[in-house]
Amino acid sequence: MNNADSAAINLGKKSAEQLFDPPKPKEEPSDTTPRPLVLAIGDSWFNYWPRGDILDVLEDGLGIDVERNAKAGRALWEMLYSTREKSDRSEPADGAAIAWLTGRLKSLNPTDRGRLRAILISAGGNDVAGDAATLNLMVNENKPDLPLLKDDGVRHVVDGTLRRLLVTMLSCINRACEKAKLSNVPILLHGYSHPVPDGRGVLRDSWLKIPLTKLCYEDLESRKEVMKLLIDRLNDMQKAAINDNQPAFSNVTHLDVRDALKSDDNYQSFWQNELHPTIPVGFGAVAKFFIAALSAAPAPKVAAPAAGATASPSPRTPPRPPRSDPELVHHSHDPA
Image (cartoon, rainbow, N blue to C red):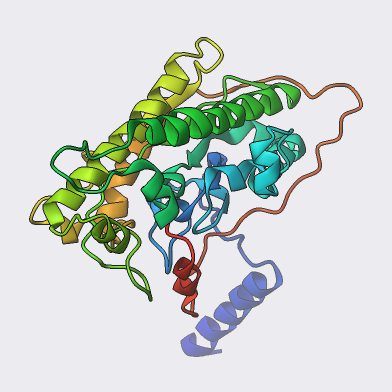
């Protein structure tokens, strides 16, 4: 046997050994830490086409799982009630968004209970800037002897109806958390920024410029001032509703994002149209407030479910891919 054959025989034996008992591949260390989970209900600031709204930024930037029930054009009363009549009569809430959220809290499996970090809310913008009729209730005709806003109208819509709905929603969520044996779940509610009524809409005429122009606000600066006052009143109401109901709402944080979106000469970098931030700059600027609040919020306290309670797992909500169809049509009826 020559040297070459001897080497080949040894190689053949070695090959058989490895093929018969292949070496186990090295196992890479895996991150077994469960991803944080947030639940969210809201309007188009939580569900904007094609991708890049506030929740998308949180999913992509923080690596958290977001489950949402959000719809463009949705008003606060629609989150709580199935009909406007039930809202006006202050009946027990039965709306799709609040029903989904309470049902999801009830069905959280043990793993999800441990990784739940917060509940996020985007609500109220459509109730203030959603239609011409509402604006007419709150905005005076532009005359030298009249203030810009009808104080009685603003107190009725914002400080009356909207506040009642918001307090009902927050109370319902906190009680649902208690029923689910979850306490001190952080609730993050964002306000809205000062829009620029320049006539830019989505596949239609604008939401703000036309009704304000009909009220004789011909120039952009006067229309901006009207909307600034309205949005300030909305933010003030949200803050007061939380602060006036302590300690019941001690877990609720209002995110004041008015400075996130600019309304100066560079506003088009931040506003895609009259009511929606740009992607990625505008929504990214608002999302920073959520990132800071989520980072600072304490984890909820989790108790064992009540004896005999069943907590069936719910399917994970996968990250939403960009939509292939122009669903912006849904903005043709409702704004945010």
